[in-house]
Length: 605
Image (cartoon, rainbow, N blue to C red; front, side):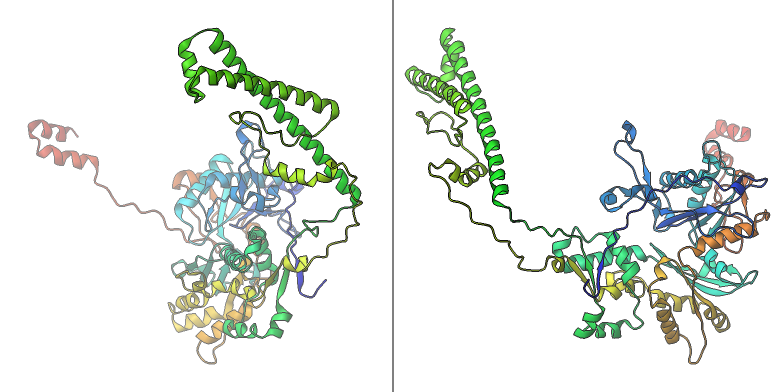
């Protein structure tokens, strides 16, 4: 294969098998279920105690659903995650329970939970008798948590639940055990990018910042760039393929301007451009056929044309017969003058003699058509165009343009002389390389698409990039706290896995920090799965800690938005509603101005 030419994998998700629950899951003590509820991918698995808690989540699937049209009529019902296979044919039907990274459509969220419980071997018909550790967004709205708690406690009747932030779980998974770490977390996912300051093991929620850009916006930007560049391949430039280019062929430039200057050099372009091969068919439109194949194809077309002409003759004969019968029996024999004059007007005729002539011609045309049908059946002759009828007033059977072209192809078959022997057909060589025509040259697009998280203005967004937002967050702290935070800048999330991301953050920090100051940037060991690993570790360490789990009793007493804080959770801010005037005081106020009866009502109240 030519250098720098890559084929799209077009990976198709395999349906998840229905697994059996771990044997230890039904021991004396229920084993927690860990659900990393991400907007791009959901991950579910068991937090099994013991020396080997398990290598990875047993279930990973895209957090999307598609409702089938025939679900209510016995057809396929809603399909979730990997059961969808390829997403592109169903892209217009896909629905997600998330708005950005916050679950808002709890009906779809219930489908995701049903899918998780079913494929993990948990029977959710009666109840899910397992504690659940569930990840949520930073500063998650109380309404979203309230609806989620209501779904878990009322629908699945779980015993208890613990909420935590995915990036904090990843942070503590990569930090030393039992250490009150401080640092600055940069978490970039599919929909959003967050910057979270952590002071002595607790999240400083007041200074958290969010940028509404992530991998989804980068994929959409890359799709627009390539569709403008290759308008002939609009349908082939799909979002799934753009996500594949982002994951496997894109990188973050340490210096964006200098990197663009490098791409201006033809040698650098030729050595670094990635040519993405689109699928194509090597068969030409005018592919060559042998003489026997062409003769057989023409014979097939001839038979189809014979059938078409015979069917049209029969239809025309039936129409003429019906018209003739109506004129003879309904108009002439009945002797109804009103209908007779009405028929003259409809046929645009001036006298009965003209109508009689028309009837005679119509009778002759019917007889001729019957004879033609009999002759065609007897001699199998092909009458492509009927002879010109004697009466121009009658409707003629005009062949279509396609039929005329087909007839022209069959001229040697109808000629009396034998057709000449066809010359052997030479193979037509393509004038250009079809494979090269179906290639996407991905050059500067490799750095332009992921650059939007640093420069949102590239796609017209009026937001600050990561570097500006990071500088803004640091400026809200004293100098000593700033020095502590920058010693542990932690990168996590699926959108930080580009090559060069760590070097770019070090360059940005070097520019914003004072001269000769120190800082350290650390990349998560597994930016995608560390959130689930951290939640699993937390569940095993705090299984007996009643101060970290929200029980059903807590839910009934304090509401669905209630949250018990821990090292990886959000800060709980209860709802404070403004006090309203009581109805009794309002009644007394209105009663004072309404006479004796009003005052009596006020005293009674």
